[in-house]
Image (cartoon, rainbow, N blue to C red):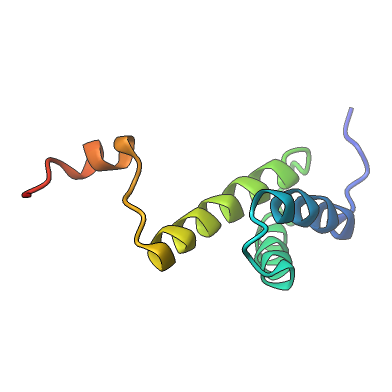
Length: 87
């Protein structure tokens, strides 16, 4: 059975979750990214997974921006996909 869909509540919950996982990122920036993702998904026919999908998408964006800002190398799996290093 489908639950009531409340985009504002989803944004609050996902923002809270990601703010705890990424305390080095500005909460307002996280909320803006979550809102964008939720807005992109809210017109889809099934709403049950909007929160999960929004959280996953924003988490990837935050991880990518952290790596870009700190120069931390990609994970082993990402390096495998890119191929061997020339070092």
